[in-house]
Image (cartoon, rainbow over all chains, first blue to last red):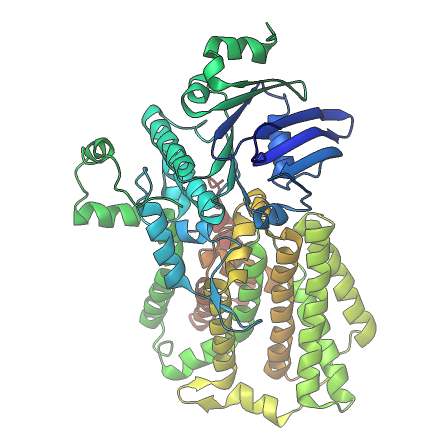
Length: 252
Length: 337
């Protein structure tokens, strides 16, 4: 650790196997509060497994996760959400046939009445969802539309907005712009910058090295289930990152 | 939290390059949407069927006949609504007709034992809940495909019904039941009124509670639901329990409809329930459903069935018609997902 404030999240020696496949062989990294921390690596390097362990989707076999310096362990995605970790998954983020507001409030519905006779506060959820998306850098057509009628950028904006709505502490993003065009990518990056300016810590997986250079302050390189290098982004170039990801060179 | 600053000017100018759509364009766009026409199928077909049969048969459009058709629709409507809760989870419940039979048998046992109508009704619904719990457990927790699970419980439940009853229907003569079947409150008979009330409650459950949203979310995208922390097995269990409970409720209406228990399983009920569900705009791939759609779908099937009989078509054609409806509806939906 460096400095007085603890890392927002720190991972120590995390391992995870699926049958005979060792997806994580002792990965360690950290994210400083209020920064964008990027993870880069080739397919199968263990990036997605790592963040799924952080998000409570997988339980790690061994190793430690610390949040604000305190050890944490999540039995389920819900436990991670309760602890203030929200995740924007690349492809499994939204229910297409539900409306934007239903997706934003999924499993966090506002209700009234006494259990088991609780009914949804639909108007209030719509109002809050509208307020949320109208503040985005990406134009979302309307919160009563079904998600399948949105463009890729609009969907990603909704997923990110939902994550930030429920946690202004720590948001994990798995390739948030992978399926987007240039303009939409720029808009989503704009959105990410805004939430970081508002104090949220972001951990992002990206295959786009230019994006990593543009967005992040810290970058970690994963290869073969391990974190092989970590640098301040300002100390590396995109070309050097590519070399590290492919294993063509290792930094001193 | 996010600031509410307006989008940068650059974005807005790009967005405005495309002129805003005119009213006609908007109407056309809505008409082309799959949601729109799948939702319109059952009501449109119902109106067309009413008009066609009224033109052919003068006795068709009388209030007496319409009321009789609505009363006939009580059981199909209940089963269609129950089936919808399995189909919205991207599943299916093939055991509903068997549950209907067993619940009617158990209802008869309770009634014969002198436990009275309310307890007998609770027994029937209870049978449905138990079958639903079994279905939901194997589909959600053990993760066996819905088709196999409900095929298995169909056989099991059918068998239990036959063993317990020895295959013999028991007559049930109850004044209250008879009144529900034959008397009216206002223009409508009690049985369809009770079904309508159940439908309203289910509609509220689906559209105005978190459970309803969760059922649709799990049916639409199980991984996304899991990632949002939804307990998928428990939600699937809820869907199948609702389906089972409705099959159990339908058994009460079956007993009051025919005046005795019905130990023999009539699988036509399952096919009709599936047909009504898809006619009502429910996506066979899960995630999209209403309660009123399948309700109208079941009424439509009853109207077509009655109409065909009144214009002199033999009842033997009915399963074929329903089968064609299922295949046609499934074909129209094939491109999805």
